[in-house]
Image 1: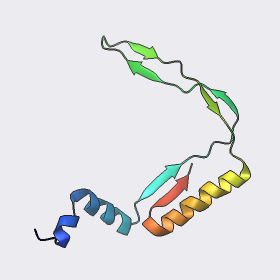
Image 2: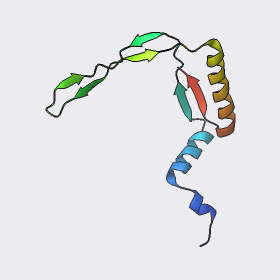
Image 3: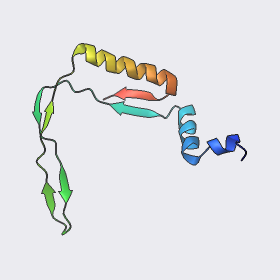
Length: 89
């Protein structure tokens, strides 16, 4: 079996590279700065076409300033390695 560069290229990699070269690779992220219980909206459609709602509760714990800095700094360093622009929401 002969290994060539063609075996390393697939359509997904080609699209990613093209977007990177055009500066279109963006990944958004969110750092939660709140404490307490939250109920996100979670609706679904049942098999008979009716709407339902899940009662989901999430305990949110605020990120400290040090943790926020760590997250931002890590993503900045990662961007330099893989060339994806991270955008904080």
